[in-house]
Image (tube, rainbow, N blue to C red; front, side, top):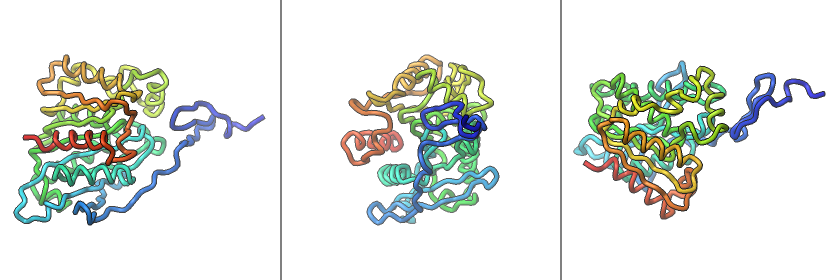
Length: 305
């Protein structure tokens, strides 16, 4: 008979749980690349430590134009990576490259947060870390914060929150907190969600989030299924939601879009669909036609006045 340490208690899409409580992730640790100065785009990046306990860090990107001493302050994108709340990294190639492209094309400062992941740090660590990082960004509004790039280049009257997949879900919770708690001296203009995760896709998808969040409030947990009163309090003026025709998360993103329109929220929301594509397709090739279309729309949402 197999010992309990090798017996599987539960198996989910991203990991399995053994009867002794051990968790085995199916995907190996994400490759991480160092920050750099991109000779092609001129975008510079650096890593910063926001908190040592709990461990929260971020990668910051500034475009070439920031090096111009006469350049006006630039919009800031606070970006939250995806990965099912248990995988990926802001320091991985897919998110580094995406944020670098957005920084160059939008002429924007980008702060990409590295938050705690299950199983080392179960949900709600991802939400709390991201909120702490956003408040750290806000600590620079007086121009004497700990990071010179934010002091010197960020326009805190033009802040955007963006994220993909799980990061889109986290972006929603951040916008709700901004609307409920406030973010002093910061104006969050818009929120961008790319193929966001919410509850209701399937019982299996709901169960994995509930398992990763031991303190969950069940299927009606507002982070899993945002109620109308939460949607009505989003602390931004505009929301842009991307869906993909073949994405298994498309139905819940569509539901979010419809619920937001009916919630009483006073802002404007737009939905953009990529036909013939699946979940997070754009990371496969940022230069393919439909990925370029998505990035162009993402960038125009930031640059429009």
